[in-house]
Image (cartoon, rainbow, N blue to C red; front, side, top):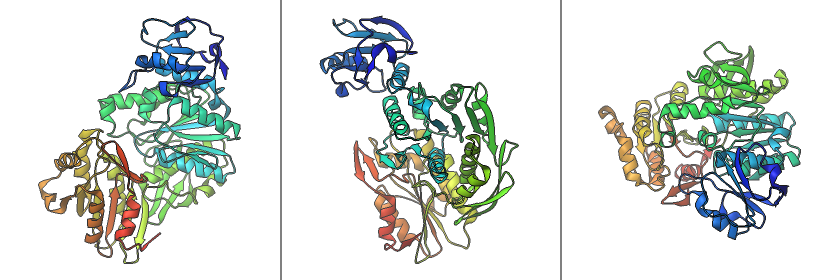
Length: 488
């Protein structure tokens, strides 16, 4: 519990009516979660406007209301705080309510189109290996040292983030590594957080359903670095043409990493095989278990971040060699018959190209590459034909299928993808709406020496159709149709 006036510090108050000395038991932006003594923050969201639920929040026990737009008639005994931006204020309030936990540990955030989950997962593993109590906030999982809690979004809401960080602090966690999505940045879910460092991986075509233009998408990512304090570091991939853009206005110490350009942290790929990567990082040779150039970038970013956090170079390089990839990121299996199966979360044009190019770079012999790919519903439609075109150009056989169709007709999604199929590839493309049947077909078509790539869902254990999430695991389906003879 906290005194109201204490948690309103730096929220951008326009006016305050009522007492600021009330005891606040909880902070909520969902009226259904309000209890006696709650502070309710009315936020205008994409689907619902919290200002419409103020009366309901008061009926449920809210004693104070933070709002942005006019609320109409005020109720006696309730404190009303008008702010210039209620979603921003929520982040500040949540941070104040939980005693600003982000300032009590080393919080590093990463933003970019691809690589966020792999980066934070590897950072978590690395710092656990180095002996630290470590936290993780990712799409796959949320970890408070060894304790796992459910994860449903790339970045949780501001109240959840601060509650989780507070629990980390209470349990003695010293470092936390966090994915920072463009949605979370624009929606102020990270407002009030104090970052020790920010990392930029890359930026490619994605989320234009939300940001409308690629320029707006870039600006959203850049905001994260603009807000970093002078005491923090800003680490960017200088091989990405937008890497320098991220650093233009930041007050943080500017650092770079690359495989191709001059930079503060440099890496060279010596060997790239299905079994792993032989890298030369800042002049030191190291063998890593991850595969592909895109993972060389991830590993270099991990190394650079660890060094910027003050860790010993030799210990970091030694630890890199035992790190494991994040679940659903180039998961690699091989059947007894010699069929290679790969599961990957690639669901953007750039990610698909990276994975397919990696496979083509390291595969040997005359085996076929059979790719099963789809596109998510209720998301950026413009990338669908691009993804299909890339898949066809880099595969011998393609099966277009459902991903998470959500509210859309999966057959229509596939039709839009098919618009990117060139006539010379049509004979090698199948359209199978049922994802299970698509994976079964890929397994049936494969012969010893072939490679099957199942792209799009990776770690997900469900398929979302018409608002319902049904159990669906690409790995389980592969094992079933490869006679459960898959071996690592």
